[in-house]
Figure 1 (tube, rainbow over the protein chains, first blue to last red):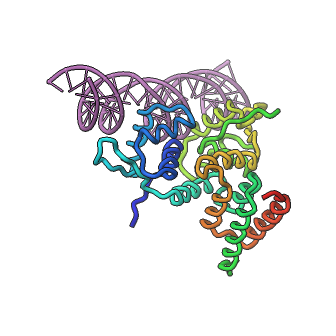
Figure 2: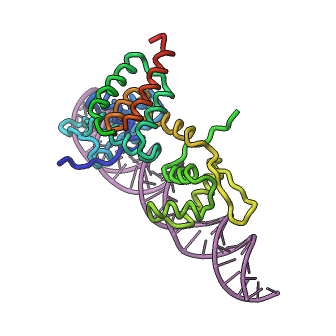
Figure 3: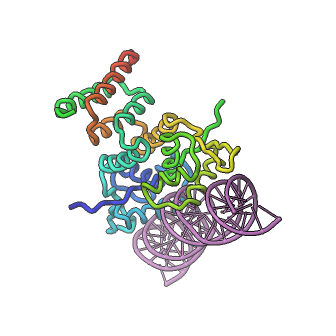
Length: 130
Length: 130
DNA sequence: TTATTACTACGAAAACTTTCGTTTTTAACT
DNA sequence: AGTTAAAAACGAAAGTTTTCGTAGTAATAA
């Protein structure tokens, strides 16, 4: 059984994105990437990553002086959990409403549309009940 | 030009849902609906609704002693804004990724799938570029 | 070995959100 | 008018998240 990790906060999510995108990283590196987006102090990033480590959201290698952090949860799993909560809170659980709004809001490419369509076909097959 | 309202917090969103579902309501009524879901004091709900009024998220009719509050933003508009932010924060703006996860996560009914498909067809027509 | 640098650890302040006790106001009833 | 009931207003505490200053520690260079 997998221990259930807490939901990351928004700032924590930013950090997770850096780690997902770039792989295991030092605090320094993560902070530099964040800095490119907005001003944020080094110790702020450090503290946040320490908190995330305490929570179990990050793992870290302490062998070297400069600790190397890794996301303890996959991007997909994290997105899934966040989406589930968001869906409940904002759309009262109606995935189709969310999907319609998401599609209406941003114009996906043809390739993406095809991918979605393929998934729909797949779902429809299984959907023998109603 | 429409003044841009702040994003509602989670608790504020709960209150908005009550108003969207039941129309203009008193604090007492909103609190009773919330109470049915979880324990929450009357003055807590009152305070929150006053704050929301200050922020411009709610309008209120003060004619009668018991003030009547109304959502100052439509459900769709609010969902749109929240979704936009969530999409950015969690999926880095990729609507198709979000849609795929949302569809995979919850099994929409056949009717809903058809509705989504119809929208896809519609989008594809307009999508002459790629 | 001392000085410098780059890092972690720690604590606490600041900002934001949620909660509710207390007071004040308003209306209704006697 | 005086009393009571229900509501609004207010202030502040509690909880959470974000921020960063300061101190301590390990590695490096002089």
